Length: 326
Image 1 (cartoon, rainbow, N blue to C red):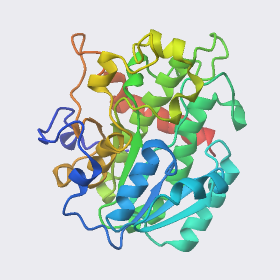
Image 2 (image 1 turned 90 degrees about the horizontal axis):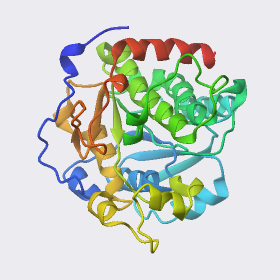
Image 3 (image 1 turned 120 degrees about the vertical axis):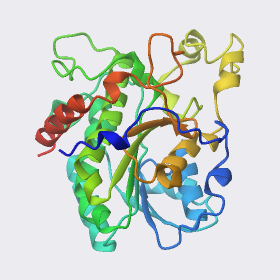
């Protein structure tokens, strides 16, 4: 695995963009005509807004979906551009392989892969192979998808892969000794943190491995956004987390930090298209910029933990993921 450390300085670039920029601010003047993109989860929440923005800028966007009928309803709200839904379930490896085969029949090159879909803080469950579901769906499914599409990605000019992580990664790293909670009690937020750390480490590992072939990868914290991702949380828990007040409205803190659904896709769009990132990769981004490396004084809602940008851990995760999806 190639180490291109000089292109991975984990510190703000000074993009000058507002953290609550709109998609039109990020893609202003960009023509993506002729580009092919894949957006997982691209029919709901910030994924839908990512699809909408890329399609409006001229890209042909493929959206893997579990439920074609549900996807058709939401994707019908996109009035500009070409959007193509195809069936796929990130928790079903055979389904992912079928999607890959269909994509490679349709397209010889893919310019952008946005690994956006995910689940959060859900009840304990597992996918095939016995993998804990948050790690399995959020990371392993995307690992298998990305590896399957590599030939088309590497055929493109300056392809980029964006993996959605979360500030939730700061709760903890990947527990390589007990990923599936076989010897420790399952805790949904610990599992989420592990999965989101894995998303960041995967982007780093992908960049380390393929940067010399022109592919660059980034991980992204989209910000706090109220979307269907919170479906497993009741109001009482969101009040305890400080997201809602006692009346069930956004708390003062959340109102100051949280973004609209459209604003929630802008760091993804920036990582996917910004010229400021040319020649760079493997970086964790937030608020339309590269994030600073967190230390003990960094506020809990910002920065990236060292365990999410550790090259040795990225290699360890890559080797485990290869074995898990073989």
